[in-house]
Amino acid sequence: MNKLLFTLFVIFSSASFQAAEIVAVAHPGEDLPHDKTVVWTPLFQAAWDDIHRGLGAPVKVDPPNALMDRFVHVEWKADAVMPRDHWKVWAGGATKELIEKANAEAARMTGEKKGPFQIEPKSNARIALGLLDRNLVFKKPLHRSVDAPLVFHAADGTNPRVRFFGTRLKASGGYGGVVSVLAYQAGSHALQIASDADDSAVLYLPEKPVSFIEACAKLREWRSKRLGGAYGSMQDPNLHEKDDVRIPMLKLENTTDFVPFLNSDRYFESGGPWRLYKAEQRLKFQLTEKGAKLHVEVEMGMEPFGAPQAPPTMIPRFFHYDRPFFVFLWRNGAEWPYFGAWIGNGAPMEEFKEQ
Image (cartoon, rainbow, N blue to C red; front, side, top):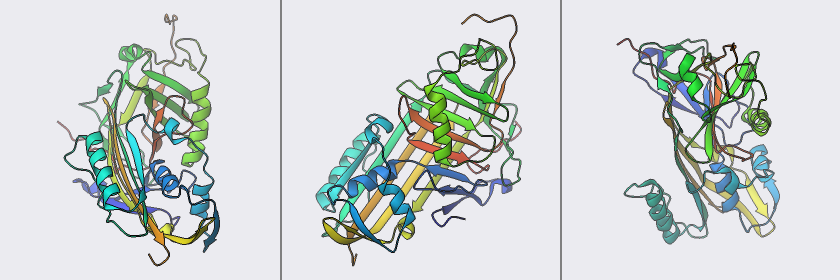
């Protein structure tokens, strides 16, 4: 397993779900353990960018660190990628005033009584505190299955029976403008479910396992060029009355400390060396027939070294997310998503129990 990957064990009531692993990666180019569930969000990159602002270019990293190099060479526009008004990074000197300001503003964003940040003030240190809190509501809810399970064929060889939502037959025809088909190919497909704002949930079931960065490249291409097939055809960009959609209900939590993988000393044009003493990411994600809820907190600290009308016939299509797949949250027109998860096992799913 790549040393960047940090494991959190999530315990479910059913023995078949016990000791399932959820993993976080800090960069979308990292190799994924495809028999696990893996999460990624660029909020960590946004905090990384802001904590280093004003230091100039890095001139030396000792010892060499491939992950740090990946962060330095990322080119992106955070304001275009992250969900509007639902995220923020506070960065500067590690003072009591900055921490209190970040907690007060974070509490207003989430509606909680107090903010989440617990990092301590520290002289001569720099901090970046990041928050991403988005409740994405679908334009039109899909339908939750009550009487039947979805058998999920996990990459670890298990086949859990899980709760799912979706739509089928005549009901599918009523999702024009809500559910878009991005791709439908042999062994692979992708759907986009619109929210009531300017972002969507994007689901991609690849033919074979890929990285986040490869999945995003493929989806970026599909999102920029709409399918042009006739209504009811295999390349119809809309759901039609023969289509069948089945998506597992998801719920997961992960806390990861990235310091062990970012512990090289760094020298900048303005001086150094600097070393990270905190780089923690805490994440919660839920996907249901109504939409998606995402909450991410990042605490980062570093200090100087030392610290249309239907045709007569329709071809049925089956969008069953019953084996490992990706789920993303993505703003319209953005180059990158603001959240991604590879669902490689049943860890984030709800076991189906007979009524």
